[in-house]
Amino acid sequence: MVTSELRPVAVVSSTASDAHTWNLVYLQLLLEELGFAVSNLGACVPDDLVVGECRRLGPDVVVISTVNGHGHADGLRLAPRLRALPELAGTALVIGGKLGVDGTRGAAGELRLCAAGFDRVFGDGDIGAFRRYLAALAVGVAS
Image 1 (cartoon, rainbow, N blue to C red):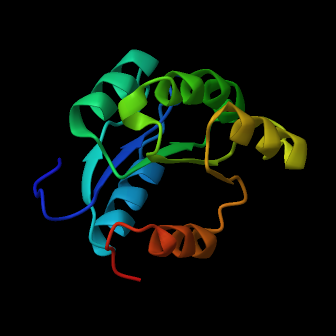
Image 2: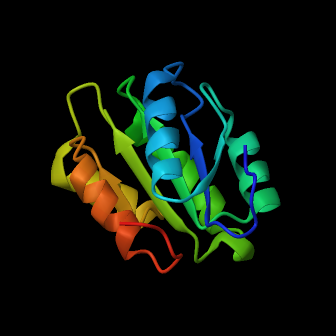
């Protein structure tokens, strides 16, 4: 749960269709290690709950993680809802994990997710790239 106003805030969530939690715990620990206060919404999170918690918390970054293979479809539905809110228009929004049942869905799938509102897509599980992305955010986190 978010515990400090002095640290940047991250919201971590799965998608409505994904019941996996190990990935969320890993991401929470990584983000906390990097200096974020983390609100981990858990598994099978309805879009309305993600949107509501992001509005309430005003996070610096929203991390959507999925491993069930339906992240592409869920992300295409969720990102525009988050981007439609003026208070979240500039919030860093990323998605990663197994985004399609046939893998990451390739460059075309990543472009569609970015067009829907995600700033970055980490479909290949490249934690190094994710860490570098977080370090580049202007929110004062450790590298």
